Image (cartoon, rainbow, N blue to C red; front, top):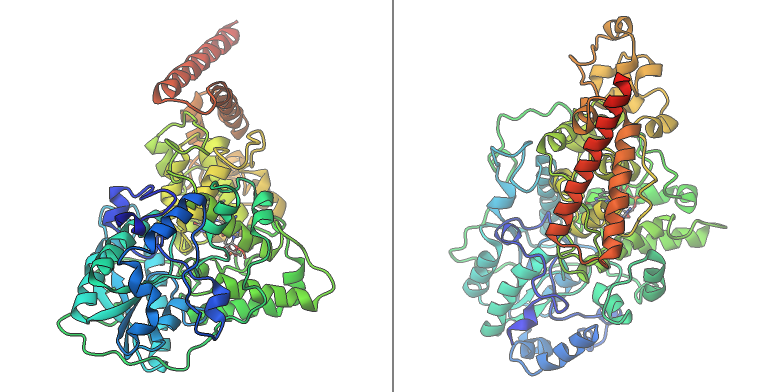
Length: 625
Ligand SMILES: Cc1cc2nc3c(=O)[nH]c(=O)nc-3n(C[C@H](O)[C@H](O)[C@H](O)COP(=O)(O)OP(=O)(O)OC[C@H]3O[C@@H](n4cnc5c(N)ncnc54)[C@H](O)[C@@H]3O)c2cc1C
């Protein structure tokens, strides 16, 4: 029964060769053949690891078939493997607290091997990449991961163990370890991301033939996405409110989570497997690169718990948290928790975070509620995980049933200017510098640059912007990133394309003096306040005094000019044009009931170009007259 190892909803969805051949951890998700409910896990009785039914109807059938397979046998008979060797495969879930996979591995095992596999393709330098880092991850995220691994290694050492670092294609390495160390129990966190689905399938296929028990609990999200999809008749809920209704209270909400482990069984002989310490970035090959500003966030569970404690110690702040009211320009003390990179790597359990917030709410008179509260933010996370898991081709426009088909352009010049902070709009460019230097920006800052690139000004394909975020964000998360890019480009979830962020007035509202711009774009640090958001309007004498000549030291907002026509210089004109295009695209999607082909899009593109030419022609005519 080979299907046992694939995403039971959509076998190998989106598992492109690029994803398959590459990275491990920093990008997320997989699927799982078996789930175990958390209350059972926490219950101290012998039923702890009962195999739970699987989700949607097709899955139920799937589950029943499963129980006759040899693969299931070792799982059902988990007690019989005690006294043998277990392997914990860390990917995300880089923590000790609330880690069911680690806890299960340690129960009744003679030895436990904690393993992390470094995939060179994911981690080693790519000299052709547009910024320091590998092909798939910027250096900031690689560094954050290494710090998280060092921290995990230290914690494991305190428990009498250590983290075994191996290198290579992860499934091959893990299979080799299973053989070499005579592993009887393989434990790793359930992951819904397509990359992991493909990877885990290979490993589980081997485990089933070799009689290795596989334990793969859901512990990355608050809910099991499959449960929610099943409750909704096999499809994910497309609105946050319906998601909330389906999800209800998490079943584990009021049970204590397992926050620590007293000790771990020792590591036995590692045979001929090549084990190393956690490498440094230099050992990975990152030499001779310069970083003028260090990313201020350190990876690891210890740091995550410290940051969480700091956030929740201010009960008033937690109780009154209301997004989107925070200040996106606050960089010295960000307006939100900055726990996203820790949640991404699982240095922090989202369930523990949730329980801490609920405890704060109990201590205060009143508090905000979803969608704007902090608990509401965690639920947004689960919302996107659920839609992503239940939507084939979630990470692309084509073949994605929830994504509007829009004739975006693929202008690499515009993309590069946006990516390299050369749009000429200081608010946009400063955010893009923060992305490159820190790998993190406030949610509304992300809104602004994503809107600018896509439906607001440049009309570049959202997948291109997604790729840039995916590589540079330290919290880069497959489900959340794709979901938010579709949202911001009005491709899905949100359709009010007439509401556009102004690259000038939006930031000014929060930060009239432009301190954020001055920090991330020091070339503009002496520009007077009244010109900081539109420096091209400053008289030459002012530019000279500010030591920043626009067009020489900092670009004019020429992109918009070159994109539309020489007469179009403003954000207003560009955004008007974008709205017109989106209006036409929406009408086409509606007319064809979403079944828009490649040719339909080509025709629409041609029609839009023709309209544009006609308009410019008649404008020129008027000007002559
Ligand atoms: C275009 C775009 C791309 C994004 N890409 C990512 C990404 O790759 N990874 C990522 O974690 N977030 C992403 N976000 C969502 C959001 O911006 C970040 O989660 C948030 O800014 C992280 O900061 P924080 O931890 O301080 O958030 P807080 O406001 O403190 O929220 C707590 C947690 O809730 C979750 N959360 C908050 N907002 C959202 C949201 N809109 N959607 C889903 N979960 C949310 C995060 O896990 C976050 O850590 C993206 C947003 C946009 C507009």
